[in-house]
Image (cartoon, rainbow, N blue to C red; front, side, top):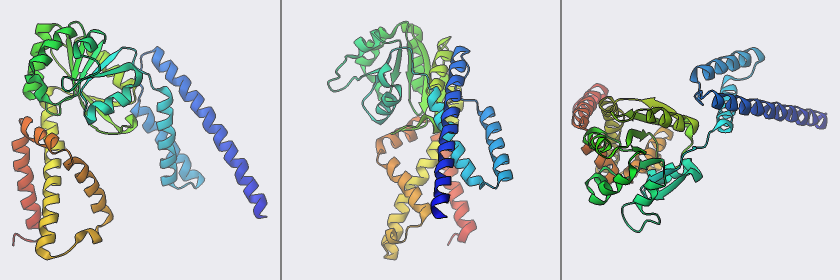
Length: 327
């Protein structure tokens, strides 16, 4: 009896895999149709419809909703991967840090790496001259480098992006340079770092006065790589990041200090009693706090950071009073 049931399971598994194979082939053909019509890679409205149908069918067939959700997420992710469109243009990524490495891993063979510091294998001007799209993945302080500004003259007629976390004065300076040198400037803010799965990530695109037709090219490139693209003007971006990034980093930094100080004062080793939720939070905090220069840069270059910190501290005091009193 047991052997017969296992044989039936094997047969059903084969059918499941056959159906998945057929679905992936149809998804690939859909990707080709999207590419011919220059349609976006991601269609979130369609994904919502598919998700609704899956959950409806799962309820009717007695399949747990969590299982259906998990399977569908995997299926959709692989479907998108089968439709990815490698960049057609040649790309130069400037920088040698985590963000530069993350971008190079996503862009693959379409990109070359260069830098203004150390001993780059490819000099910046040579990289710019041979590339159609240039991504500045360094810290904003590079704008003070005479070598950087001089090499940008080799970017005339090209598309240039930065990935600075705060736009502000850096955005205005690059916009001014784009007007004087003659390149199309489209600012970016990748909302990720390290290893990247485009399915789960957002690329913020910030147009400038010189973006022109390059804006559409840049949006299509990142959508074609599987990212969800959010378009914003520079000021709105900085206000939004003051809320989503400045306050977030402030609280994480405060949490790490509070845990250490409270442990000393109360004479305990809290690490032996870490809850699941705190463990997840600490993993994020430790990853971010390993980049103190990046955190300080975000806090110092976002012109709305002081407002965000003030509101964050006020909210913390209010929460402390509501949860247990000010004493």
